[in-house]
Length: 599
Image (cartoon, rainbow, N blue to C red; front, side, top):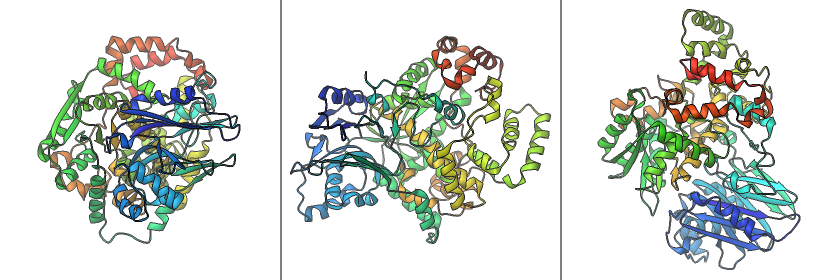
């Protein structure tokens, strides 16, 4: 796991400035404190910050050159099944100088070209320079677990693992105000675009070939196509298939030359990881849990039950408001864009704590977006009964002050089922922003609409599946971005076994009742791997890694000072934000007993 960066002056063919490349590289030092390297060949420059995971010797340093010097790679991530390819490569005459996946990846590309991508099981973003062809091949993993950002200005293509590495005096960070509508509504700018002008992300499952002064971007993996091709090849026993494939995914993700631990919340997902590890004979691993002084938010007791049952070392970090305040400021720097989830700060805090013991962590990220774990999907189950649902929720709203009922009524007032699928992940809906002085938001979100249309073709008349498919291309990406920045901010590699592509492709082709059935959703997980768990875990209703933010913001001086400083923050002079009365917003929050009715 590392940080990568590079410059390819493909059109202007100006020599790479070494100082520029070094500056890009070293802004990523948190991603790779164990080593650093650069490679420059006239108008091509590659850079690398190393976090040593496999082959801790100098043999694994990057950028890594082929023996003949023709190819050079800078690579971020892990190819979990790399050892399976070594024997064949050795038979073809390759002599290995290291025991790392980077060298295997490079040799696979040298022998098979980009067709080798379909063989890889892993999370990765990499760039390979071919000196003979004067070309650069770039690729990002299927789900986008590893990040990749780039700019393409005046014939110069620059890339990096994080946006901050792309900015300099000639290219300062400039907010694209046209993106603020989507950021406010969905809390994430989906697709290729980012919050910053001229900065784009390479989409998951996409590659780039820069050759002959042209740039060609293509999709090498398409989830929709994989789902359709799998619909006619259902597993005979889906529960047995899921359990065995999940165990295989876990085993792959324990490959490491440094200690491995698990982030353990006590919920179904992380506990299932612990159960699989134990079933496969892993003992005395370290588990890491966040606890709170506020009893209603503290679920560390559940995590300890799991750790004790499976014989793991239990490490708990009790976080306080002051600790979260310092971590949230650091998280904002690491993330580059506004924080959109409520738990960035505690993920960063627990990652820094875990770094004392391990360098690799396993996380339960992705399970809800693959198997229908959010209660909001249930609202789409009866979307064909639009009018009566709107009427019934309106009556219920008039009889109670329950904010969830009020939100449900606003949701059913969106109109069409397609609108409900599009806005399913939103906390607020377009008309809700009128209370803040914003009378109109953009009604066109092209990337989201494109993905939703794909979902409608794959799952006609199944709005919940369409929303799930949309989340897998949008909301999940925001979670993976957060997970990467917060763990790598502590120089920790985080692996996500639920997102093994073998699970993702076949889950999408399974019947909906294997996902949405039962009280908790994730029916196939609940009735396979999770059968190994104690009843306390299977039956508990999780908070979802929640934080008592409302209490901290209202009662602790450090947070109250932050609220006060918002009133003069120049961000509220940008674009659509200028319509918000910050003083009224803060006053409404201070007077309201439920934070999610205000923000």
